[in-house]
Structures are given as C-alpha cells and as structure tokens.
Length: 193
Image (cartoon, rainbow, N blue to C red):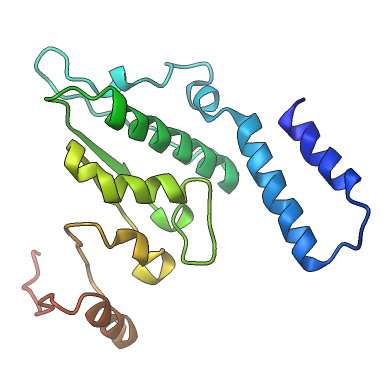
C-alpha cells in the first residue's frame, strides 16, 4: 500500500468523535506517512547528480565544497524533508562508511526552520540534533546558523563545543545568553571594521 493512500485510509477508518487530540494524532500519522512516501534521497538528486558521500571525498589532494542550494524550494516541509534526508545520509555515512582520514563540516543556514523550539518539530530536528551530539567523535563538525537563539531548540545545542554570538542589541536577549551560558565571558570586543 502506498503510504500516502494509507493516511487517507486511517482518516476514513476512524469514525469516532474528532476531538482535538484525535485530529493532532491523525496529522502526526499523516506527516510521518508522507515522509515515508517522499524518498528524500530521490528528491535531492532529481535530474542532477545523485546524492552520495563521494561528493565530499577529497580528490586530487583537494577537499571539495559541496553546496546544496534549497532557496528555490518554496515549500518549507519539502525543505525540511530534504535537509533531513541529507543529514540522515551524513549520519549513516558517519557511522558506517567513514574512513579513518575522512572529515566533514556540515553547515545549515536558517536553522530555525529545522530545529524550532520545543514543542515544535520538523523531520530534520532529530537527526540534526544527533549530528551535534555525536559528530565530534567521528570528525564531523556542524555549523548551524541562525539569527536568534530563541528561535531554535537551544537544548539541542548543549553538546556543541563552540557558540559564536554576534551582535545582541536587546538587553532581554543578552540576559538570556548569560543565563544560557553562565561560564562565558560576554565582555565587549572591539569592532573588526
């Protein structure tokens, strides 16, 4: 059975009262079944180069830079599924295929779209959090970029070794950073301009 059809069948099978809890459960099931049906690896490669760890293996003594540009994809869920597929492939490679001298830096911009604050979630959130927690011991570094730490699930970043915080003009945010990172020195540094 096609997972997309299965979601519709589940909705049809349940003929009880549609409480908010039941509606949320059906939505969660539908989301997960859609994820199974999407095949993110196929979506990533499309008509182009198949997504493979070979994209980031050194060749001719040079380390390649692979950029997967998702800005042209307008549907946020599709971006989250594709990002999840990429991160899952990197995680699998990290655990099973990585050579002794293989290193990788994985960067995601606009991380708030993929690791939103609790209780919100996306298909990418669990695997991106796992990469932060376990990547270091496999020489996989993660650079996640966002505008405001309040827009992300900062608990996912508790395993990170380094945080770079740019300008924070709001006293409210500055106090939040001091509370979040009590051992950090937040002295003002000179401008690089």
